[in-house]
Image 1: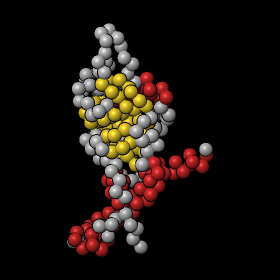
Image 2: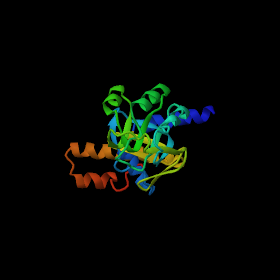
Image 3: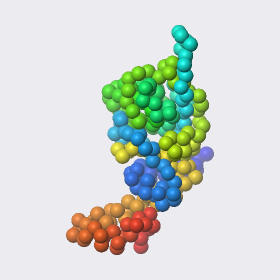
Image 4: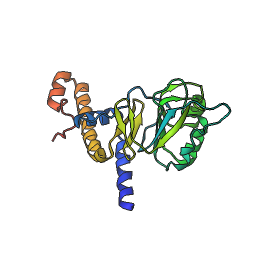
Length: 226
C-alpha cells in the first residue's frame, strides 16, 4: 500500500543519514540488543538499510554423489531486502559467494549479512556488493550445509532477527532494529547525533570534555535538548 511504502522510504532515508553507533545508543536506551557481534563489513563500503529476509542453514552429511541445492532461496527475495543468513557462525564452509552475489545485484537486493563464512571476496568487492560476514574462507558449503528454513526467526549470538525487522550496516558493522521500534529508534538516534555534534563543537571551541558532556547531556543523549 502506497502510504506504507512512502513511510518506509522516509524512514530508510533518515536511517541512512545516521550511523550504526547512534542507532546502537538509541537501542541501548530502550534496552534492546541489536548489534551482531563479530560480523564485519567485507565488501561494498557503503551503508545498507532494509527489511530482513532471513535464511537458516543446517549442517548435513550428504550421500556420496548426491548434490544438495545451495542458495536457490534467492529467487524469492524481494528488491531492497537485506539477506540475513544464519549458518551457525561456521568457519569451516561458506554460505555466500559470487554466484549468489550476481543474482542479488540483478534483483536489487540491498546486501547480505552472513553469520558464518563467505568466499569469492575479490569478485564481490569488484562488483561493489554490500557484504557483511563473520568469516572469510574458501571451502564450499555444498554438501556440508543446506537451507533448513526461510523467513523464520534467527538467533545470532543472542540477538533475535525476525522477518520484518530492519537491518542497518556501515563501516562499524551491522545491527538489527525490531520492526515495531523502528521509528522510535531513528528518532532517538537523531537526538544522539545532535548531542554528539554539539559536544564535539564545544571541545573544538576549547571546552573541557567533562564540562561539555555535563552541559550537553551526554548521559542521556537520546533525549532532545531545547
